[in-house]
Image (cartoon, rainbow, N blue to C red):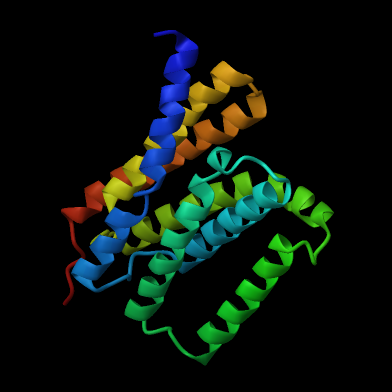
Length: 207
């Protein structure tokens, strides 16, 4: 097997793992019925990133297999956000209004009611937005000193898929900007995973 064939295989594995990326976290929330250590800001930043990238690829007419992981993760993100809001008792009229605004704006992007140039400007911002989502989740765990509701497996899958992208991008284009962004994502995902593992066995003691 050549390095290029290995890179292609890693791409297929990466897309496959993205199909179950958020599933361990969803199951974890349903098990503990708590979302105290999950950062809602981090989830909304992720939602923004996945929405923009899905819309950007779709409106540019790219092959579905080249970005299939984004809509798949997006569906999982919807479920995850619903569960987090449910367990934080934040499902109310405001949540409904914000959801309506989100889906209206998303539809405008996909249907190109909003000029495509807007997506072209937003797409490069998705990497720092995604990195920020990991940082705020890490801070949420460190502040709570507890990770009962956080799934280390989800963050391992995130780190692994980003690591495979480092190799495939290096083989494909060696784009230093993309490589740097994915390397940062790998480090942040592993940081969240190890923090979750560390605090999982050190629950907060309540008086």
